[in-house]
Amino acid sequence: MSQLDLVVFDMIGTTIQASEKIPQAFVSAFAGEGVQLTSTDVSSVRGKSKREAIQELLLKHAGDKFAEHRSDVVYAAFKAQLLECYRQGPVSAIDGAEETFDWCRSHSIRTSLTTGFDHELAAVLIDKLGWLELVDALVCNDDVSAGRPAPDLILAAMSRLKLADVARVASVGDTVSDLEAGANAGTRWNIGVLSGAHSKEQLSAAPHTALIDSVANLPELFC
Image (cartoon, rainbow, N blue to C red; front, side, top):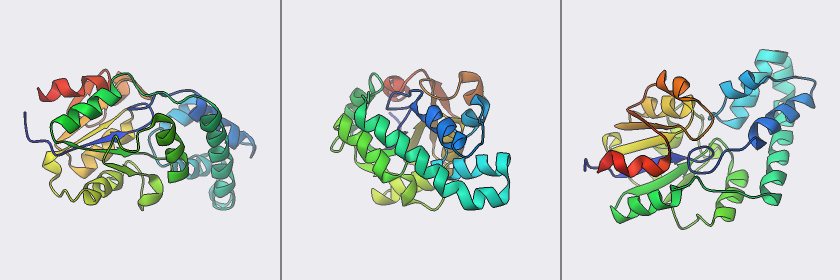
């Protein structure tokens, strides 16, 4: 197996099962401000910082001044809806995700979760899944100055774990933004999974070293 020190995993759609909760929360939060989003609008920002995604969509649909004054309001509505959904409803791991974390640990490979959510939202998911001790690091959007496709989440995970060589790091995600972030970070392995927001066709057009059906298949790439 090629030397691999760290795998940086996205959360929703990659290690945690995706649902319609996130696109519904986008649509509902924007509708509260009189802005109607399409499914294409929502798909275009999947994987990005949720704050930055909201700002981008407001700029597109409502202009600079509206975005400047209402983005925090829209984000608050989006976050409140998701917090309620995730606190009240079930949260499920992608089949094989925990086994892949265990495989990494058994091969002395560090693991980090990264997300476009802030810590408050991410903590609800981690707590429900009981993953606090299962991975080595959690990096959220409010930990970095720029979300995906910037490389900041990946580089922050490396910094926390005192790893400096991106040639010994793999990045795994289900969106174009995940793959663009991996490319921008320069990770040796930049892996797309087909279990989440974006299709094989969409991921194939983004920079990648491999596409796999699920995170459960990750060990096969290194055996």
